[in-house]
Length: 418
Image 1 (cartoon, helix red, strand yellow):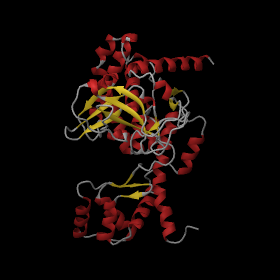
Image 2 (cartoon, one colour):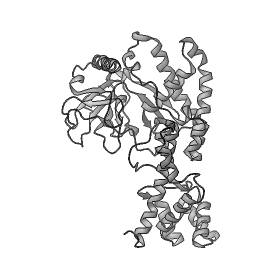
Image 3 (tube, helix red, strand yellow):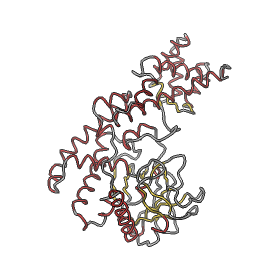
Image 4 (cartoon, one colour):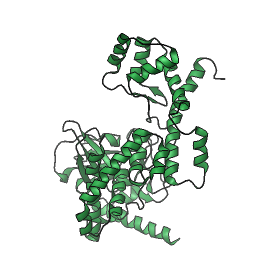
C-alpha cells in the first residue's frame, strides 16, 4: 500500500529529526512511532526493545517546547481564557508551519494529525450538541465556541499574512486542545500549557499507563510528577538546562519490545475528554462524575418528596454548614461525596445510600434525560450514525451508568442481589 509506505517513510524521517533535535542517537533504539497503536488503533509510540523501569525514553530540550501561559492555575478556564491560550498556541503552530523546512520544528509540525479530533465546541452541529443531554457541557461548548469565533476575528490579519484560513485555525486549535500538557503554578496563580514534540505522540490510558512525564533541570535531578496534569514546579533556570522527559514508570514493570508506550493525560471526568480531546476513555472511567444535587435546596426538596420529611429552618441551616460554599453533590461510579454522607448521618438521620439511590432513580426516570438506555444502545448500533452523534450518545450513556451503580448497591443492601 503506497499510503502505508509513505507513512513509514515520514515516521522514519521524524525519528531521525527527533534524534538530531534531542542530540540523542539512541532514541531509535528505544522507541518508534507506530501508525496502529494497540490502545486506540491510531498513531502511537511503541518500544523497540525491552525497557527497564525508570529508563529515560525521550529527553526534549525546552527550546523545542511550545508554551503558553493562562490566567487560571486551576485549569478551569472560562471560554475567553481558553481562547486566549489555545488560539495563541494554534496561531503559533500555523505561523511556524508556514516557514516550511526552515523551521526547527518542521518535522514535528508536519506530523500533527489531520484531521484533528472533533470536539463539541469546534465541530458539533446543534443536533449533535442536543444528543449530549447535559446542559452544563453544552453551555461550556457554546461559550468556548463564541470565544474562538472572537479569536478568529482577532487573528484575521495574521492568518491572511501566511495564507492560512479560519479552518486552518480551527484545526490547529483542536490539535492544541488534544495534545497539550498543563503545568500548574499555584503560587503565581497561573497554568502553563506545553506542546512537546515526540512525547505528544503517546496515547492515554489512566489504568494501564507504563510511562510518566517529568520536567527536569539536569539529568540527575528530577522535579517532575507521574501525572501529566500535575507536572511539578521547577526552579527558575534558562531553557538551556531544562528538559521535558518521557520515562518508563519507575514503579511499574519492564515494557516489552513491541508494547505500546502509554501515559496518563490526567484524572479527568468524561466532560473534559469529550470537550477537549474528542474521545471518551475506554471502559469505566472511575474519575467521571455526575452532579445529583446542584444545591442544598434540591436535596431538601428530594428528602421531602421521597422520604416525606419537611425540614425546618434549623435543619436546613445545619445542612448548609455541612456543605459550605460548594453545595454541588457529585457521585462517581464507586464513590459518593463525603459531605453528603456526613449530612445524611449527622443531620438527616437517613442512610446515605437510600438518599443517593432514590435520587439516581428519580434522575433516570424523571425527565433528566430525553432518552432511555435502550435508545442509546440502538443509536450506537446504527451504522449510519455520525461520529459526532455517536460520541455524544456514548457520553450520556456513561453518565447514566454512574446513576445505575447505586441502584445495584441498594438491591444488595436489602438482600435482592441473587
